[in-house]
Structure formats: structure tokens, C-alpha cells
Image (cartoon, rainbow, N blue to C red; front, side):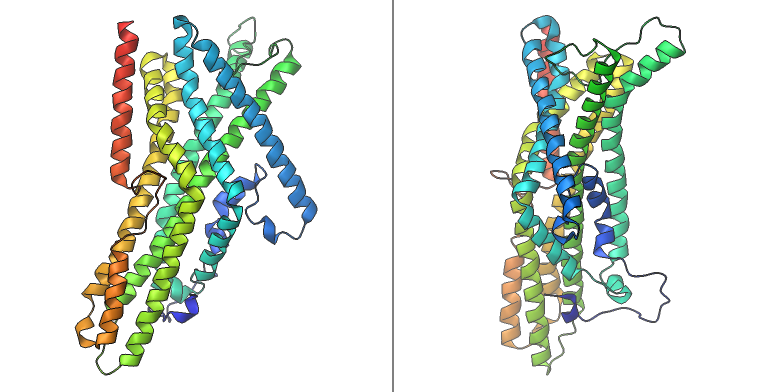
Length: 415
């Protein structure tokens, strides 16, 4: 159902500054960041095949390199677990492996379900209110304002985490060597990775390896970040449409004697509602397995990071605090937007009941009853085998993380 079928409410005489907000501008943040790693969401619209090919080569080369680094992290984890003296290093590398695996699965979902993603975004763009009057009726500015704040905070945290882990060792070594009079330049890395060669054999080998790791960390950060930014954009749009439906239903006058108009209005709302529910299922098809891995690893990841914070030096604590905050905010955002989607879809049924349906004929009431019944099973995001994601899910993840943390602290201190 397109926007042309929906009547517009609001004062159309207000002065307008600038063009209406386009769907592409709403999508600009995840699209821009994805392109920095070679992923072009709108490659099917590209008129330059060579540019698309180069971006694809860059993307696949980057992920091959990244997964080689992840294999190095697994080897480091295995070697560290062979001795009690190095078990702390194994705990330190574990959350980075969890983060990397989630980033891998999120990108894998993008590749496998690319057609679903394109269909979803194209249909949301078609439904997007494209005039100032429609955007006021949909309260687009309010939705966009909240979404921008959330995206800015989460983006800053993700980039701060990857940047700190990547560049802190080099900055620290440079200050010590050039300004504090140390005799040697410490050739360390921010991530604990096993390499089959001596990474400090020469300056060239060290810096090539260093920038290789930095690029892998940035790629993982962007893949991890942008999948969630896409989820935030899509759910914000769907919530906006559900809220608009609820407003239209609740304010519909249901005037007696205008049965045909009332039936046409309700039929258009039912089609609109059905389309939004179908799009919600596309969201689940696109994100369900990556979200499953996300929630399976979240508790352990938060647990291991919290353990590092309580058992390390001050500088390590500061670095891991950023990591801990990023992980907790990421899980919270997914749960928050899952909760918002449930609430917004339930409001449609409440609004349908609150209108003056008793003034309409029996056919209208029967159709309205079907709409209310359909809205009783709310739209939601659901990883396989998990209940619908909501703020209750977040409390369970944090509770489980604390239980793992308490067990780990008790085991480590007793030994």
C-alpha cells in the first residue's frame, strides 16, 4: 500500500524550509559506513559496474584477512588455556573472539539474505512519506530525532572501542620512546593474536602487521555496528507506520450513513497493516540467526569483559570499560527496539477498539474485529528458539552475565 492512498492530516499552510526528508537521507549513516569496508547496499542501482566490482573485491579481501586474524585469536586462546599462568590471557581474548564471530555472522546474513534486504528497503522507501504534510502527519521528525541520537551514541561507542584497542599500544609506545626517553620502542598490538612469523623482526614487518590488524578491527567494528544501525532504521520506520495507523483509526469519525466510505477506509488500513506485518517477517528472516548468536554470546562476553575490568591495571581497565559499555548498550538497543515494535503494533488494536465503531454497520464491525484479532499477536523480532525480544530479554542477559561473572570470580580467586 503506497502513501497516496492515505489522507493527510495537519496544517498545510505552515511555511516549509528545505526539501522533505528522503528515505535515502535516513539510511545515509549505515550506507556510508558499509561502503568504507566495500559493502554497497544499493549496488543493484549502481550505474558503474567497475566501481561495484572493486568494492566487492575490497570487501571479500578484507573479510578473508579478518577471518585469518580470528583464526590467530583462536590459536592464541588454545595456547593460553594450556597453562594456569596464562589463563587470564585466554579470558582477555575470549570477548574479542565473541565480538568477531558476531560481526562475521551479521555480515554473512547480509550476503545470504541480500535480496530480502533489498526488497525490505525498497518497500520501506515506497511507503516513506514524501511531502512535508505527510511527514508531519507521520511525526517523522520526532522519530528521526530519537533515532539519530541513538545512532550517534552507539556509533561513537563502537568506533571508540575499535580505535582504542587498535591504536593505544602504538600511541603509548611513541610517547614513551620519543618523549619519556625510553631506549626501545615497544612493538605490541592491541589484540591478542598468534602469528606464524615474528611480528617484531623489523619495523616494516611490525607496521604492516599493525595496520593489517587495525583494518581487520575496523572492518569487524563496522560490520557489527551497521547491522544494528540497519535494524534500528527499519524498526523505527515500522513503528512510525504502526503509530500512524493507530492515529488514523482512533481519529476516524465513523459517521453513520457513510458506510461505503467507512468500509473503504478500513479496507485500506487492513492492507496497510498486513503489509507492515509482512515486512516485520522480512526483518526476522534477515536478522534472526545473527541475533541468535548475538544473544548466545552476549552473557559470556559481558562476563569476561567485566572480569578483565576487575582484575587488570588501570590502563587496561579504561580500555575494557569502553568495550563493556559498548556490549551492554548494543544488547540494550536491540531489546529496546524489539520492545518498541511490540508496543507500536499492539497500539493498532487498542486504537481500533477506541474508535466509534458502534456507529458503523455490521460489515465494518466484523472487519474491525479481524483487525483487532490480528493485532493481538504483536509484531516482534524473534531469534530461533527465543521468545520475542523485549526489555525483559535484556534483564535476563544481564542477570545471566552476572551469574557467570560471579562464578568466574569465585573459581579464579579460590585457585
